[in-house]
Image (cartoon, rainbow, N blue to C red; front, side):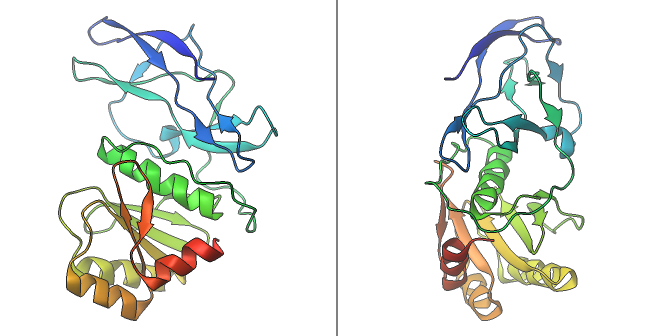
Length: 227
C-alpha cells in the first residue's frame, strides 16, 4: 500500500503531504518505495541520471530492482526528491538477465517530459532489459537511453519525429552494434515511419497513460520477443 509522509520544501518552507507511487515487479506484485519521513527532501538543481533512480526490494519476492527516485513539485517552482528508506542509488548499469515470464505492463501517467522517459524505461525493463542507463551519445533531439543490445530514443515533445531523427538513431545503434527503438508522444511523420520500416527500427507511441503502443512490425516483434 502506498504511504504518505509530510514533506517541507527547503526553498519556501511550505509543507506538503507526499504519497509514494507504486511500480510493478516482474513477479506481478506492486513495489512501493518506503519513504524516510525523518530525512529532509532535497531540491533538484541539476539532473543526474544515476541519482534519478534508486534500488528497492520487492516485499513479495525479494527481487531488488531500479525504480524512479520519488519526486514532487512545489508551487514555488522547486522540484523535490523525497528520501527513500533503505534504498541505494542505482548503478549506471546492472547485469542483464534473459527473457522472463512477464506480468501485464503497468504504466505510469505522463505529465512531464521526465514521466515520458520514465515510462519508456519501465517498458524496456518490462521487456527484459535490466541495465537501462542514459545513452553515452546525446541524440539531436529528445533523450537517449541504452541497455545491453539496445539503444532507444524518447521524444517527449509535440513534434512528430522526422526521417532524419530515426536515421540518426539507427546510425547510433550501428556504432553500438545494437538494436534500436523510438518512443514518441506525437506519432511519426510519414517518411519517418517508412524509413523505420526499411531500417528495422521499432516505433512506439506513448499515450498519456504511459502505455507504449507499437506502430510498426519491428515494434510488434520486440514486444513479442522481449530482450
